[in-house]
Length: 201
Length: 201
Image (cartoon, rainbow over the protein chains, first blue to last red):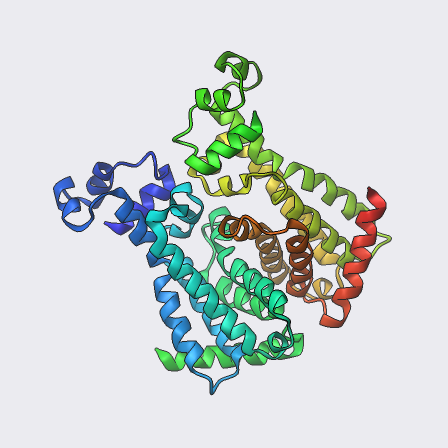
């Protein structure tokens, strides 16, 4: 049902899609849809939360793993986040810019997204270049690293055939560069980040 | 009229906004609107093109200025582009993710945006780190630098009160880092890029 909604919302628009159309696409009767969701807004909220909540769980785990360099953990977070954003057949991140997503009804999504961004900030603070930044500069750098990660939504929109794994690794490398990690350390931190993610699965 | 449309499309949604509402907001009769635009799609097309065409003109000029380091020209392009995207009171870049913007009717916008991205690619190729990259790697790096620049749309959406000048300078610095410019050269290339833009005005 969520996949059907993601497809219709991103292909035809949120306003133009009815709950009846979502139910039909999912092969259900409209009444069955209302058994799970109390309306179109609830479906949009579930879709939006699905683009951030799994990443927040990974982020919290990575923030705790202080035995590994923060650079490698930031790489791992960015990599996982890009895979999530580019994971399904549709591009639910494209719904972030809907005017509806800014309203009070989607406060939970906004809150989870803010917590995810804060976790990026925590990891960034613990990197060597991040530790040297003043608070304001660090906040700006966090916005840019987080923005770079989310920009895969726009990249994928323009070119849907991209290989998510290639994009994820390149974006995570770029995130370390934006963080200020010297060129010569990026490859080493990437290997460390990959090792961390591999041990996890 | 375009400002009225940008406000209504980004605040209430494209589908939910009628040409009558745009005309009313602009203080015109609907008939006068149709004197300038042959419908809602034409208004959206004009808004979308307005977010890329001025940057393409600057990009073309910068590609020609081979007397200045490509790093500084890339900085200047990214800086100008962020100022354009964050320029008006609304955020018309938020309309990029509308399903409608992907359709054939908006082919001119897509074409101008592709040309702008190609100009980023040309400048990137002429930088010292860019010249060392294989074609595929360079294309990926171009997507990331371009994506980083456009990510200010998402950053601004989450936090509309941001100072565009601070964001523009920080994003242009970050673009050089993603390009692979060493940390020690970023400040010098930024000064050179600022000089280039100042001489222009």
